[in-house]
Image 1: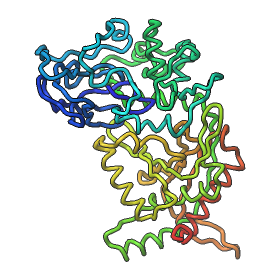
Image 2 (image 1 turned 60 degrees about the horizontal axis):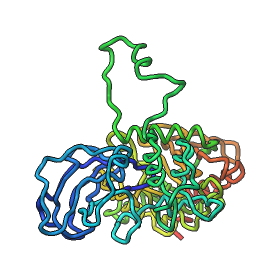
Image 3 (image 1 turned 180 degrees about the vertical axis):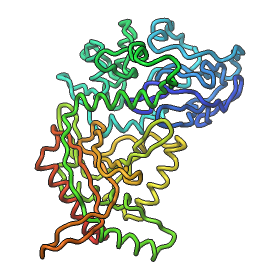
Image 4 (image 1 turned 30 degrees about the vertical axis):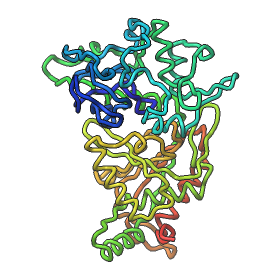
Length: 432
């Protein structure tokens, strides 16, 4: 089972393209997997015969678990039906050492070889920078957290990640050897409350119990972690939309094939604001702050069972029309769970817009390691006082910038929000 990002710990097999006994070539699609965020076809990395399928359709396997075996030509085919995947800890303890001529697994424990097509898309490791141990070995943020939670000594770990990094799989392997269990995917319990104690407060039959799926568990874990570990503070501003609405209407009349939304302009404005205030275009990397040249803007998209944040890369270099077309494509594929990991991982800031639901104002939770997220409310008619003391009505929206105080202090956050407001209220600046 391949790893599709640092926070992904398991995947569900949803389809097999090959059957036991079929010949396969490198690049042939073997099976389709679904994680909490996306679905993806997994190709073979070697030629031979698919001699054994170990994970049936609908079963979930941990990252690094062997889901099938490819043997050389003429090898015996295992005709037994597919069985459920063995958890990583049990597999590592029970699996004997491989003989020299043993069949080659499709994806065994995470390895850093040129044949692994997923090495190139592990953006959290590549973009957000691991910490460096005294001996020079680097460690990814998730690997550090796992090691701290499980009491694993990083000094005794042999790195297997890109560039000699210690990654999450290395910690999981060490935990398996030490007989420790991985509990990262479980959602934290508030104030020690158990499921039974919560249910006991309500009459039997008065509720429907909805089991947690992988996406909801991941969302719960990450949001609780964010609010507990990231020092949030919030800046709110009211912004005049009159000019922007007029420009948008004119653009949509002149280009009937392009239907721009207010959100398309918001993405562009935030990207340009980050360029104008580069110190805010940064993320927290535990032992350092990483400041970026490009403005990669994540946009929260509601999907069945949760949400996902596809990223508009280099949004500061793209026209509003280009952002609009890209966002429509990303949102459509997000809802069908067809996004590739590199399309939703990373990002230097994000936008969450609930204006279409009539929400006037709200504060969003930061998605670490990002340091900011902009919450956008609905446009509304509001009275304001003019310079001559009279009152007029304008189109206005309220936005709230959530900031990680470790990276963005009050003045820096205010400068970023001021720059964003300038672009929205003077949209011609986004066209130059």
